[in-house]
Length: 132
Ligand code: ZN
Image (cartoon, rainbow, N blue to C red):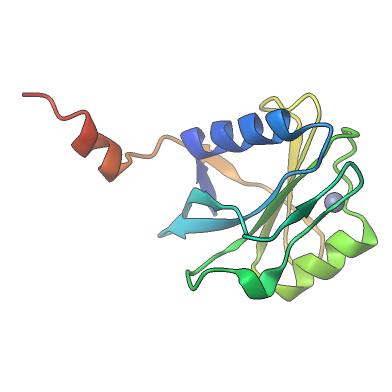
């Protein structure tokens, strides 16, 4: 599994701007590249936890989840492990200071996995910035 650099940067930014509250969302992929973050409607965010209402999830294919730990400790909590096992197989936890080295990725069992950061060509964006 891989993640598009721009998507990762977007994630780091929203996690940072949500702090000190947690940010939570679901990840969507094109092929084996994670390209999109879906904010689940009805997500309750506080300074302690972000509880996603998974039943509110729009009908799109998701590969996993992402949420932030403003404490900077990216170790999953018991509630996190429960969420990981429920849906998807790629789960990111982003901690302060929200830079390229402050996130960790886990599989559905809570084991650390490596997520390769790749340059991905977003088709929609190319349409917007078409050169003439
Ligand atoms: Zn957590």
